Length: 407
Image 1 (cartoon, rainbow, N blue to C red):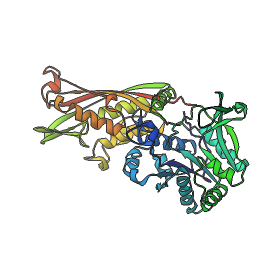
Image 2 (cartoon, one colour):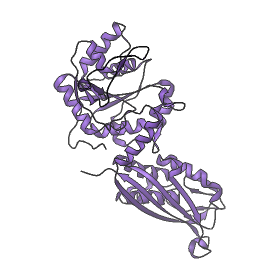
Image 3 (cartoon, rainbow, N blue to C red):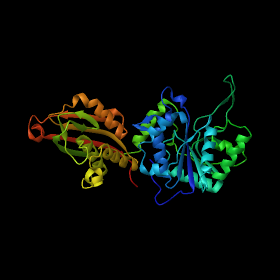
Image 4 (tube, one colour):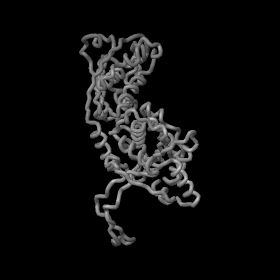
């Protein structure tokens, strides 16, 4: 769980997020940083957590240019405070070392430059504010500081045949994590020197600093700050993501719109041909309205009318996905996730069944969820009431959220 450090601003800090790898060890498919955990891309989780943990810091992603479309799709639903902290991504290099150096060079072009820089793996989405603060304090005090975990297994050194040649004392060993933190001028100079000397095989930035003659100090890492490397890590990560959000909330929403002249209705973001339209200040998408209100209700943050008053001409004819995206963004801004949405459309016409899968897919896309976390049902009122008389369409919804416990 990542809580924002209240009142503290890290305006002298930059964070480079290395995201250029192919993730070959996760098997066929998208690079690991663009795969999803509980409906959210790994890199989006990482960026949101960094922004919440280090308010005021500038965040620079380093990506593979060939994956630029994936990157932009993955960050489309970032929290507003994350977007405001981010710089335009730069192209990574052939190795992690090259990518980190290119990020450092891009940060160096900023005026004024930062005092402290953190370099973090995009595939570590559970970085916490405690770890960020320790890294920054370590770099300020020591020049170079990295998080590390004690090694609990016995380590064996072997030769090319598999024969054991030694057993290091595990008490002196640490498993290095990121973010690794440095005085900016120190690590930039070290990377430039390594490039000039044609040393290009360092696997982390601490090794670059050590090679350049600097002492690197280790502070306590966080066992929860796991790096996603294999497919099994995704299951572990989803379980951790849920465990970090024990505050389970359920909200309900209801909306109704009357029929008017027209040739289609909007339901769940899908345009459905019909002999009438729904009347409303926006596009009258009764289903999206009900779901948005359910989310606002679970957050105890009012309703659509409070956020988007119908008296404001700005929202006349607006696409309802604007409202639903905003509701989902409020969940992300609080470090939460939408666990499930269940909605029912109540009407005689149009028939919902033929459009159900398209509606579920569209809602899932707007909310940033897997489709199996969105249920859409339809019913009639057996010709009773205003919907039974064919005067309009109603919808009701419940939304289940998981939020971190507030401190």
